[in-house]
Each structure stands twice: as structure tokens, then as C-alpha cells.
Amino acid sequence: MSENFVIPIHAQGFFAVCSDGTVHQVVTFDYYDPDQYYAELEEEGRLEEELEAMAARMQSFLDEEVVRINGRRVRPTVEMVDLVYRGSRTRPSVTFVIMFRGRLAPGLNRYENEYESEVVEYDYEVYWSLPPGARVVEVELDGVVDVIDGRIVVARVARGERVRGREVIAFEL
Image (tube, rainbow, N blue to C red; front, side):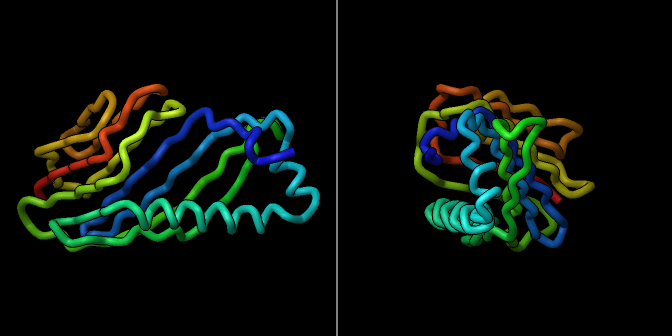
């Protein structure tokens, strides 16, 4: 058995922006694992080692991105990774808790992220929740984008879609 037979099927990312500039990010990847690769690792007592490797790979991806808040580069950091099964050992989900922090100011603030453009292998959604009183003034995200109540941004990206490798959310505080 190999990790190569684990198939990504869906992902969701949640970003909660605090008024002090801290961004709490939770990203969950859902997989189809017909050979129960992760369950076997767990039975063999090797799952923790695999999770540490996953965290390192995710950190490597994050390190390749250029994330800026108000023009200053910030460094997202993996704080935790966990694996659970959604109803079956063939349906693992891996969740990463990621944090970064920038300086927000009264008035206009801008989040930017640059990364490699790619064709998406699975559907995913991204949810941004800005601080109370914030108001979104500009959004550049791929997929179908909605702004709800002026401060919550939802983007839905479909499998097979090409993402540009650039994101912008500008908002007023």
C-alpha cells in the first residue's frame, strides 16, 4: 500500500481575521483511501510520523507562497495537523491549523497571496470572516465568489478549474 493511492476529493479552508491582525486558518482535505493506507499506519503506530511529514510538506508549500498584509510579507505557520475518519476508514480527512499575523490599521487594509498557478484536482471552498465592523471593498479570488453581510467572503472553486495564483481581499476597518 502507498500514499499514492490516496485520492483527494474535496477541501475547505476557513480564515478568521482578528482585529489585531492575527489570521487563524483551518484547512481540511477529504480523501478517498480505498486501501486504508492511513488506517494501516495508525494500526502500526506510524500515523504520528506521517502527520509530522504532512505538516512539514504543508509548511514547505506555505513557505513558497508570498503572503502580504498591507504590503508587508507575513509567514503562515502550521500549528497543528490531525487526521480523522468521516464514517469509514476509507474516508480520512486531514486538518491543518495555520496562523499568521500582520498589522491592520483603521481604514483600508489589504491581504495578498501569490502562489503557483495550477489546475485544481478537487472541488474546494474558502471562507473568510473579517472582524466585526469591517467592510470588503475588493475581492480577487478564483471560482464563484460571494460577499455576505459586507464582511464574509465565500469562494467556491470547481475541480478542473485553473487558479491564477493570486488572491486579494481589501477591506476597511
